[in-house]
Length: 120
Image 1 (cartoon, helix red, strand yellow):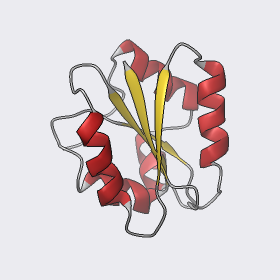
Image 2 (cartoon, helix red, strand yellow; image 1 turned 60 degrees about the vertical axis):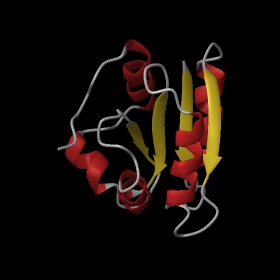
Image 3 (tube, helix red, strand yellow; image 1 turned 135 degrees about the vertical axis):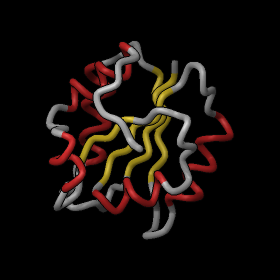
């Protein structure tokens, strides 16, 4: 399994790179491919690049960013594929509504194949 991370390094708290470091450090057995947005509307091209490599039966996506990053990325992510989200924005309303507070809980859920929330 490969964990694909779509990260916005400029989202609110500017902590995406630190979060990626924590994931790699805490889960050394996990293959991680990182895709960083480079502009305000780059989510589409990054998702397209991820999907070229992504194996839906094995791989997982984690989005790091704020509400805007999440919203833009999910416009292009197939609804049939799971994703995880960890907030690094300034408002993080989606994360608050879904009670997403723990990075490790989010990554563990991915590794265990668990669902901790649903998108309709």
